[in-house]
Length: 231
Image 1 (cartoon, helix red, strand yellow):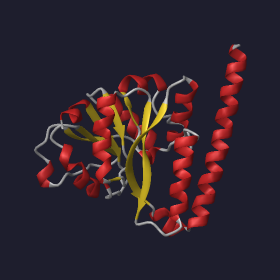
Image 2: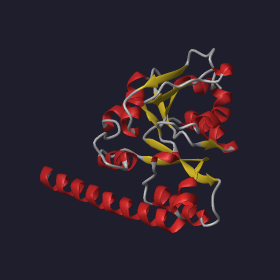
Image 3: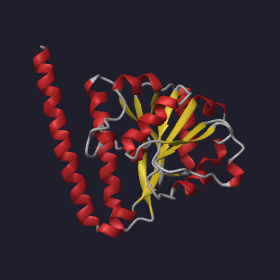
Image 4: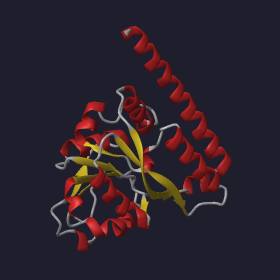
């Protein structure tokens, strides 16, 4: 997988989080070529069979997903950045569709279609909603595995570190503001639905919808106001 030599994979790790250890299984096919950066507030330890790869890096940074991803991105050495969550899991289409993307060329922000593992039955509704939000409204979230050129990430200013939530959502609004394309990769990436199980499907879904709408409305007003001021 020579395309993997061009990519830095950035995975922020929360305090006490162990889910990233399961992600290692899915990363194994590209661990010899891709630069894989785990970044967290605690000392991280790789399993013994992962310790002989110089392209796999463990970084410590202050806690905060945006801060951790920016910190790792600044230290990444490859031209393309792929941001994953620690509880991301691959499907058979994940790496093959990423390889196809490299063949086509990476321009703009790219994202995967999202599925859920360990999901309650009601998550089928969320899966459709995520597809509509990301493919039709062009508003993917970070658990959909953003892929972009390093130069574009720098132009976007990285993830906003002062946002109380939705740093991924805000990055996409910034991409729209500067006229960058936001495109699906067509492969699928999985994420955990445990929050919906523990906090309740309706409560979690309603909360996410409210926060997304509120933040999106603020961003739309800001962009419209800025354009009017410019004109």
